[in-house]
Every structure is written in structure tokens, then in C-alpha cells.
Length: 164
Image (cartoon, rainbow, N blue to C red; front, side, top):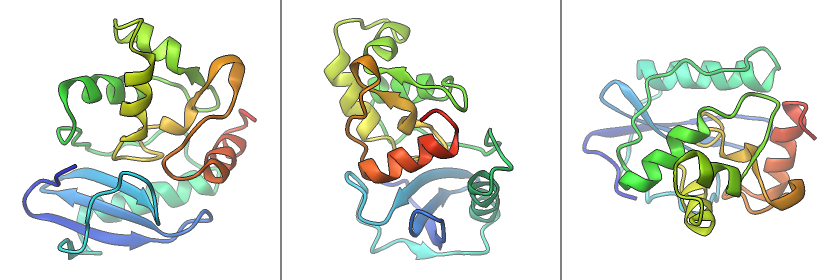
């Protein structure tokens, strides 16, 4: 994943470990847990804890973890993915708080019923963890499957939302 030019970052605390937030211009482009799979190299990212979008994201995530927020109201930039990935990420936004979906169901929603594996790959590369709720996707018969942030975090997020 290549970040947009002029991306700025900040580190935000969470009950599940530090989260890096990234914004470009006036949109959020990234939310990654520490040591998350598929996260980009952020070594060149300028620190900007006072950036309005990063502050707003940190506040809304804190509300989410405190059980005071079920939906995020943030300007998002999903353009870092391929057209297929963007389609999957948009579909993730429609999975309601407290509910789960499957890779098979997502593949049907986006009109590619045989692309379950590709959908899984796109879900795993979601650059906006929690905000774009990839943790709400489970395997066949509700089995907990991979999560780029770690299965323990996925379990905790689902438990926080009351779906486990």
C-alpha cells in the first residue's frame, strides 16, 4: 500500500494497544494497530497530532471503546486500494454494529459470488481498521478467521459490540 503524498500520522492509545492514525489532506487514510499485518511503512510519515481529522478520529475511537459510539462520522479516503478492494471496503461499511457477515455473503453483495478468497484478501488489507469494520467478517458457520490486527483483537472488538 502506498500512502498519498503529504500523509501525516499520530499515535492514539486504545484498550487494545496503540493505534496509528493517518490522514492526507482532509481525509482519514489509515488506522493500524501496532504490528498489524499489511500496514505500510510509516517511517517517513510526519507526526501531526493536532491535525483536525486525526483528532476527530482519536476522539471517535475513544468513544467507540467507551461504548458511547456505534457509527463513525469521519471523512474517509479509500483510494489507496484497487477498484476491487475499494468495492469490498465499501461493502464492509454496510455491516451494522453488533452484527457479522461472512466472506461468502460479502462476495455475493459485491457481485462476485466465486471470489470469496479474493474478498478475504481485500478484507485483510483494509487500511482503516475498526472504522471500516473488517473485524465483523467471520468465516463459514461464524468461525473466527484471520484478522490483520490479530485474532485476540478481533475477538475483543466483536465482544465490545455484543456480537460474541
